[in-house]
Length: 274
Image (cartoon, rainbow, N blue to C red; front, side):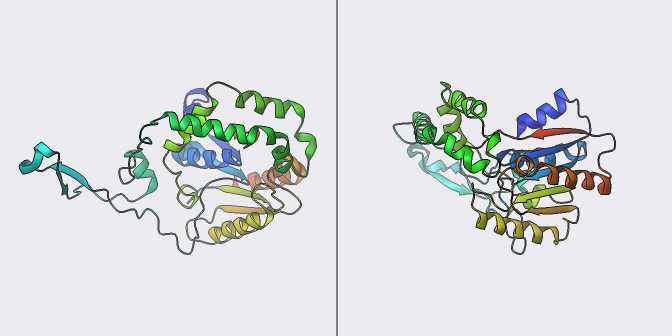
């Protein structure tokens, strides 16, 4: 997410833009769009990843403040500590918590003895497990338009998976803090959300459930600029599987929202999530 923000600021020189993201790229684009503020004029999400909590029960950031410790003068030799009351102002949002380094989350602790090598082993195990399944999983991702799951795409994923640093990249993902919920980052934002209801990656039932959550979110105060397009007969990549329908919906959205005046378009769409 930080790299997307840096690209927008440094390479695109903060040109007003509309961001587009699919799958994992959707979750990254949503967070980046929120961080960019007025620079990002709108957001298009296709079967996006990211935590979307029930709008009826979502209460925002509600983590208990972390308790610091200070040495006990009488027992400092033994390293004993006593609780210290947290006097910092309460954190009001996930965004604020992220800017402060997520002080209410426990710090990352390496696995005893194995240390950070455990992350490499974990990443290697994931790659070894999924590598033989790459072609089959591409069939799930592009289930309704298999011509897009061509050998070039499959070979590019295999090449990346065999890079010496791949296990470390996957393993280090376990150190990352949880993403901000979409409930927070999409508030007051112009958003067009596509949900391919025949999504074979998460399952059609999960896609239907997520579509209903987004529909309820759009009816919640603060999300009146969220537009939902549930696409029957389309799967995890509706922009690839039903491109004409998606293109028309995007153009209609542009025309009615008026957000593209003076804007560029940045696309954040990973080829596939293995």
